Image (cartoon, rainbow, N blue to C red):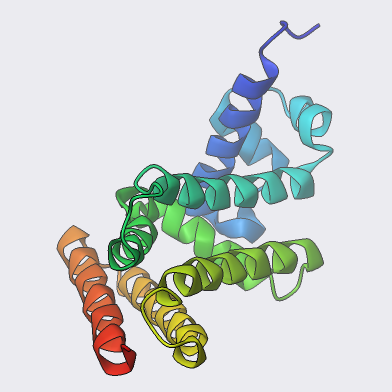
Length: 196
């Protein structure tokens, strides 16, 4: 019988082990056994808490999405100016946790698998829409309405593209920082180009 109060701890252990396993073996090579071994827990506990590997994979994606959201929310409040909020959105997407090898490999595996898995595709759409919506919220305070949505879409594509390029080139921290600076410069150029 599991100890009372251990469920959140065990769930997080399994999510962390999933990220480590996918980072090392890829999504296809990750199994219930590889996850449970990395977590130091029995394989049956995955079914108990998540219903199986697929449920755990989906929970891991939701964890990564939540981590990205919390990284942004930790920096902003109602007094944050729109341009500064845009910079915080970029910073959150290039945060150190988003640069870790296991995290980047896990993101890439999930993105690739989302083309073949309806639930992962839905979560990827949530992620994309959230980024664009967050950007649009600030751009609408800085640009004429007709340009704000387009600026948000362009910025989201630039952030994703620069992050993806940095990951695929196996960039180091300095190169990630450079990519972050490029994204910030791009957003500032949009504000100057379309500004009221």
